[in-house]
Each structure stands twice: as structure tokens, then as C-alpha cells.
Length: 438
Image (cartoon, rainbow, N blue to C red; front, side, top):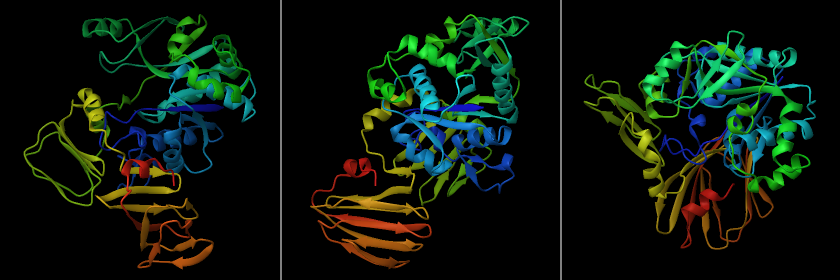
């Protein structure tokens, strides 16, 4: 079976923990209890979804469909060997699925009769969700419908979700957009299902639909034309126009963690990091990524989030109003996970910039020659080597390496290597530094 996980998002509704590089699906906020791991270890949404699929379907081929800015974070959390289909631009879910389908055929040699299941990266679900995905793949292989949807059995009348209407056989008879509360109550009484955004079909079916709407020959051609492709959702382009379509019901825990309110509902702890809250705090969560303590007193229905990118103090419904406010900040990203490790901007001065760099074992960073600034590296943890103008030096904790302007240099980690990189000069630009993919 082939699984395509859609991983997108602009990272603004859960600021400052999320940003354009580290969207919400990469935040490690969920304890690994389901996997039998140490309760003090945390995993992200993408790790949960990927693990859940692998446990339910060990032989499944999983491909992540995402934008270029998320590739490094995905490989950081899932490993360098994960299959990734990179979108050159944001064009909504139908073009993303069309590109992924072409990638499966032309790059992974998937046969057109093989089943493909597409699912979002960010729902909070239990194991039964993945068993339903497996059933959807089986239905594609042996059923008579062209598309199968996952219908979530509602736990309450919601105004936030679209609804699927079905008959007794599971055939889809209609779709309804996000309703008002009285209409949602009516839908529930009629047995309507939430639309979970999970689609299953044969690869050949979706390729045929893609070619009918987009002029392209193969994967490479579509990727080249992708920025000019019309933005349209998969629901509008395909699902709502298909007559032979059925729904499989998932009756279990399913939450869309798109806001601070829903995200904190899924967390099993009220605090992460150096946090102290007194007994007067009610329904309050504090997530602290800074290496300083955060104290909460008398907080009710609040979320406090602190990272290198900023500090948020808000009621739990503030996510609905955050996006335009975050856009006004116009600050460069100061923390990001990369395929080789991570970096965090520690200090910014007029003529210096200090960054904490963590390099994973076996990885390296190749630096181009900086003509107008010197650099000083101080090794904090681990061991590796530094190559300056072709000459190699072994380094470990306490080593200080001075790199004059105009010098080409590379750092290689044998173990996990943590160092402080200080840039010195009059032409330091934080935004340029963060854009530079080391």
C-alpha cells in the first residue's frame, strides 16, 4: 500500500513555537506512551502519524508531500531515508496530490492499479485511525467505488468541520460545508460524518483526473509547471464531482489540533520545560523552550509559550486572531530543525551574532567563504573535525576555532556535536543567516 502524508502550514497560529520552517506538526509536545517509551520523552505530530502507519502497515510505502522549507525538519525527525515529494510552491491540495501521484509513478515505479491513501499530517488520533486507513486501501483493491473517504463519527455538533452524508450502504450522497450550530445538530441526527480529509483511490484513477485538469506529461514536467498551476482543493476538483464514492467510518478519538485550545486539550501534561505554576492556575498550559524558568501565578484558561522566536501570553482561543498579528512582527526565524541538526540564535548585537549549532552524528556543514566577517567556534559537547582551507583538525569540548574572513571551512560531527558560532563584523544580517541552508 502507498500512503501520502500531506504536510503543509504557515506556522503562524501556534507562534512562537511554530514558524514558517517549523510548522505545528514538528512540535514535540506529546508523550511517547503509546509506543511504550519513557514518559519523559516527547514526539511530534508527524512522528506520531508516521509511527502509527508503520505499526499498522509495516510494508506500506510512505511519502511526505511538503514544501521545500519543511524538508530538513522532516528528515531531522523521520530520518534521511524518508521519501519526500517537494512542492515548488503552495497550490492547495489537488495539485499537491497530483504531484505526489506523478512522483509515485515516475520516481518510485508504483503501478497504476496500486491503492493510494492520502491523509493529513496533523490530526491527533488513536490506533483505530490507522486500521481504518488500512481498510480503505483494501477497499480500493476489492471494492467498486473510485474514491473512498474516511468519515469521522462526530462526538459533538461542530461548526468547524465539513460533513459527509451517506446511505445505509456507505455510499456518499452529499457533502455539506461548515454549518451553524443548529444545522450541525440536524446533521448529527441524520447520521452525517465529519470529513476527515483522508482519501483513497487507485493511482491510475487520480493520474487520469490530474491529466484532465492539468496539462503535463510526467512528474518532472508537472514539477516545472507547478508554480503556474491553478490553486484548487482536492474536494472541489475531484471528490465532489465523483459519482462512485463511498465512506468508511472511523469511530474513535480524532482531533484537529489547529489552535492552542485544541492542541493543549491533547497534551498529557500542563507544562514542558523549566516551568513552575502555583495551585491557583486553572486550565493553563506553559510550554517553555528557553533555558530560563517561567513562573505562572493565578492564570486561568491561558497558554504561555516561550521560544527563541518570542513569548506568547494569551487566552486559549487567541489562535483565531494571531495570524495577522504575527505577520506584523516581521522577525526572522531564530530556531529551526534541519536534516543535519538544529540551530538557535542566542544573541544579536550590532556587530556580532551568536548561534548555538547542534550537528547530528555523521553529518557535516559546508560553509562558503564569508568575505566580510570573521567567525569563532567554541565546542560545547561532542567530538568531530574542522576542515579549514583543506586542513583538518580534530575538536572536542573546550576547543576554540578562529576562522578569518575569506576562509572556506567545513565541520564534521563524529558524535552529536554542539558548538557556539559567533560571527564578528559590520555586515551581520540575521535574516540572511537564517535563510542560508548550512
